[in-house]
Length: 124
Image 1: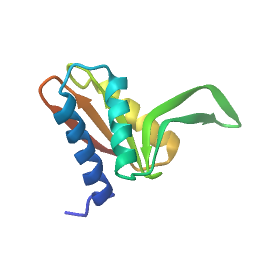
Image 2: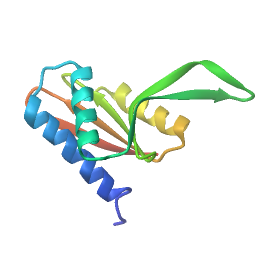
Image 3: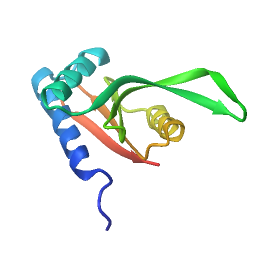
Image 4: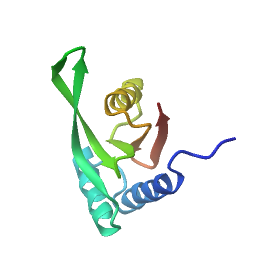
Protein backbone atom coordinates (compact mmCIF):
# COMPACT_ATOMS: atom_id res chain seq x y z
CA UNK A 1 0.00 0.00 0.00
CA UNK A 2 1.40 3.40 -0.99
CA UNK A 3 1.77 6.52 1.06
CA UNK A 4 -1.20 8.84 1.44
CA UNK A 5 -1.11 11.92 -0.74
CA UNK A 6 -0.20 14.96 1.42
CA UNK A 7 -0.36 12.82 4.55
CA UNK A 8 0.80 15.41 7.09
CA UNK A 9 -1.23 18.29 5.68
CA UNK A 10 -4.32 16.06 5.43
CA UNK A 11 -3.89 14.94 9.02
CA UNK A 12 -3.62 18.55 10.19
CA UNK A 13 -6.66 19.52 8.14
CA UNK A 14 -8.79 16.66 9.52
CA UNK A 15 -7.72 17.73 13.02
CA UNK A 16 -9.05 21.22 12.33
CA UNK A 17 -12.37 19.77 11.16
CA UNK A 18 -12.73 17.61 14.27
CA UNK A 19 -11.84 20.54 16.53
CA UNK A 20 -14.53 22.67 14.87
CA UNK A 21 -17.14 19.91 15.14
CA UNK A 22 -16.22 19.16 18.76
CA UNK A 23 -16.64 22.84 19.62
CA UNK A 24 -19.78 23.65 17.62
CA UNK A 25 -21.52 20.31 17.15
CA UNK A 26 -23.99 19.95 14.32
CA UNK A 27 -26.91 21.99 13.09
CA UNK A 28 -25.28 25.22 11.96
CA UNK A 29 -25.26 26.59 8.44
CA UNK A 30 -22.25 25.74 6.28
CA UNK A 31 -20.96 29.32 6.46
CA UNK A 32 -20.63 29.08 10.26
CA UNK A 33 -18.38 26.04 9.91
CA UNK A 34 -16.40 27.78 7.17
CA UNK A 35 -15.83 30.78 9.45
CA UNK A 36 -14.68 28.49 12.28
CA UNK A 37 -12.39 26.52 9.95
CA UNK A 38 -10.89 29.77 8.67
CA UNK A 39 -10.29 30.89 12.27
CA UNK A 40 -8.39 27.65 12.94
CA UNK A 41 -6.33 27.97 9.75
CA UNK A 42 -5.26 31.46 10.78
CA UNK A 43 -4.51 30.38 14.34
CA UNK A 44 -2.39 27.44 13.13
CA UNK A 45 -0.68 29.33 10.29
CA UNK A 46 -2.05 26.96 7.66
CA UNK A 47 -1.89 28.62 4.24
CA UNK A 48 -5.28 28.71 2.55
CA UNK A 49 -7.53 30.55 0.14
CA UNK A 50 -11.24 30.83 0.85
CA UNK A 51 -13.87 30.77 -1.91
CA UNK A 52 -11.21 30.23 -4.57
CA UNK A 53 -12.63 30.86 -8.02
CA UNK A 54 -11.95 28.36 -10.80
CA UNK A 55 -12.71 29.20 -14.41
CA UNK A 56 -13.85 26.54 -16.83
CA UNK A 57 -11.97 26.50 -20.13
CA UNK A 58 -13.56 24.88 -23.13
CA UNK A 59 -11.49 24.68 -26.28
CA UNK A 60 -10.51 28.28 -27.02
CA UNK A 61 -12.87 30.03 -24.62
CA UNK A 62 -13.60 30.51 -20.94
CA UNK A 63 -17.17 29.52 -20.15
CA UNK A 64 -19.36 32.04 -18.32
CA UNK A 65 -20.03 29.64 -15.43
CA UNK A 66 -17.31 29.03 -12.89
CA UNK A 67 -16.78 27.28 -9.56
CA UNK A 68 -15.89 28.49 -6.08
CA UNK A 69 -14.16 25.92 -3.89
CA UNK A 70 -14.78 26.52 -0.19
CA UNK A 71 -11.05 26.36 0.57
CA UNK A 72 -7.80 25.52 -1.17
CA UNK A 73 -5.17 24.55 1.36
CA UNK A 74 -1.51 25.31 0.57
CA UNK A 75 -2.27 25.14 -3.18
CA UNK A 76 -2.57 21.36 -2.75
CA UNK A 77 -5.90 20.29 -1.25
CA UNK A 78 -9.45 21.38 -2.00
CA UNK A 79 -11.67 21.39 1.08
CA UNK A 80 -15.39 21.31 0.45
CA UNK A 81 -17.67 21.76 3.48
CA UNK A 82 -21.26 20.62 3.84
CA UNK A 83 -23.86 20.73 6.58
CA UNK A 84 -26.39 18.20 5.37
CA UNK A 85 -28.24 15.18 6.72
CA UNK A 86 -26.12 12.97 4.43
CA UNK A 87 -23.56 13.27 1.66
CA UNK A 88 -25.27 13.02 -1.70
CA UNK A 89 -23.39 11.69 -4.73
CA UNK A 90 -23.55 15.14 -6.33
CA UNK A 91 -21.19 16.43 -3.62
CA UNK A 92 -18.60 13.86 -4.65
CA UNK A 93 -19.09 14.80 -8.31
CA UNK A 94 -18.66 18.47 -7.36
CA UNK A 95 -15.29 17.68 -5.76
CA UNK A 96 -14.17 15.70 -8.80
CA UNK A 97 -15.09 18.62 -11.05
CA UNK A 98 -13.10 20.99 -8.84
CA UNK A 99 -10.11 18.67 -9.08
CA UNK A 100 -10.37 18.46 -12.86
CA UNK A 101 -10.66 22.22 -13.29
CA UNK A 102 -7.96 23.10 -10.75
CA UNK A 103 -5.48 20.39 -11.79
CA UNK A 104 -5.07 19.56 -8.10
CA UNK A 105 -4.98 15.92 -7.00
CA UNK A 106 -6.77 15.77 -3.65
CA UNK A 107 -10.05 17.02 -2.27
CA UNK A 108 -11.50 16.48 1.16
CA UNK A 109 -15.27 16.51 1.44
CA UNK A 110 -16.43 17.14 5.00
CA UNK A 111 -19.97 17.04 6.34
CA UNK A 112 -20.84 18.47 9.73
CA UNK A 113 -23.75 16.19 10.61
CA UNK A 114 -25.66 16.59 13.84
CA UNK A 115 -23.80 14.01 15.89
CA UNK A 116 -20.61 13.35 13.92
CA UNK A 117 -18.16 14.65 11.39
CA UNK A 118 -17.95 12.66 8.16
CA UNK A 119 -15.02 13.21 5.81
CA UNK A 120 -13.84 11.60 2.59
CA UNK A 121 -10.60 11.87 0.63
CA UNK A 122 -11.25 12.20 -3.09
CA UNK A 123 -8.28 11.66 -5.38
CA UNK A 124 -8.21 12.46 -9.08
